[in-house]
Image (cartoon, rainbow, N blue to C red; front, side, top):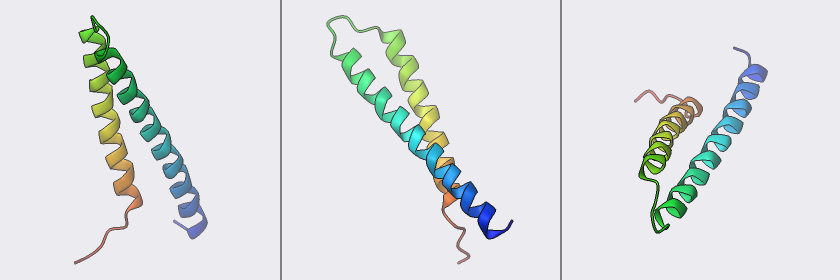
Length: 72
């Protein structure tokens, strides 16, 4: 892979990473708001938390892709 395409790929990855982080934060705020309700929808909260876990895994994979491998 040449340097230019690697830079483009890294920028794309960073953009996706930012999008996923924002979605994770939005879900966190939504979960907190639902939990604060008098009668929270537990099924909806569980689904949101599951989605947050999926996002966390995707974020970790993208962060690993951006971090160069270091040979010890």
